Image 1 (spheres, one colour):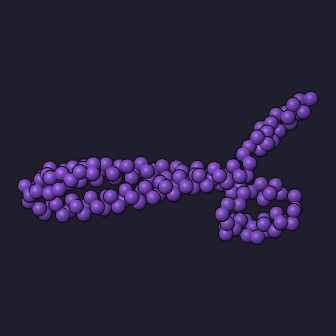
Image 2 (cartoon, rainbow, N blue to C red):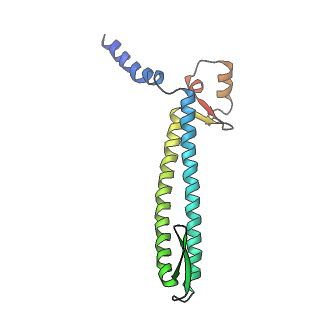
Length: 160
């Protein structure tokens, strides 16, 4: 009787999770959403890097200019007249803040990458054109042949 109750407990944790777990479509949708989030983070990081490069270019240009010289700065969509000595510290501060944001974003991208990898491993997700590391073509041929010996290939999700 004790063995029976322990096996039912084991089936609740193992089998219950799969029965009430997400369907293949839900797994793919979640995986695609996570990939899109990672792509948007990478895009934002590239945008921040371009901003830093632009700030560096302007800062380098303004360092050689007379501090009392008039310059223009775009602030909130409005072009404002200032002097170089007023604008230069603000630009340096903005560049520093963008650099900090970029560091935080890179850390978030690394975390998202680890989550994505864990999700792929948990649901045995393979991308189109990606071969199994252990068996390049045997896993797909077993799946096509209907060989029920291994549950791993049959539970995998193929994502394009």
